[in-house]
Image 1 (cartoon, rainbow, N blue to C red):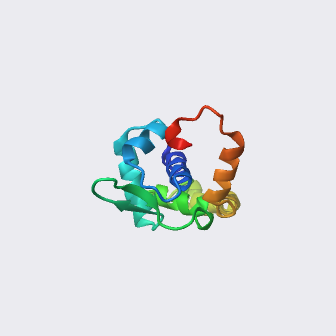
Image 2 (tube, rainbow, N blue to C red; image 1 turned 60 degrees about the vertical axis):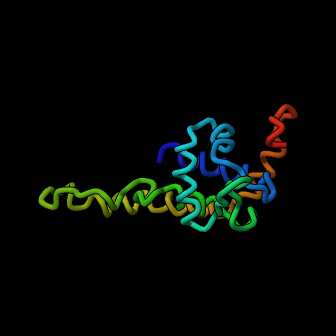
Length: 149
């Protein structure tokens, strides 16, 4: 999955902190330490998932589409996946059915990794962007840039 989930979570936390004020992709990219193109691409996924709304024109930018307390990290994970198979990509393999090992590998991995995938989803579903904001507030240094205060 690379860094999309972490950057998407960063974007949503920043938008939650902005309290409804539109934020540009350049500001979000600067905060996340990535390129604005990466942010814009992720914004498309987040918008498609109903997590953000964009406003064009002077003073435009992006805002949360719903309260941060109603956005789970599982919502963010799903939006950031960009249509990729699940975390371990077990179902996207195509083992050789003529091989004794290949014939049972997918079913075996699904059984072994299924619990891990379910646990990860449950863990992400239990945490909201609002909770991430609370954690950030407890750790945020006093010298944050004015744009984030």
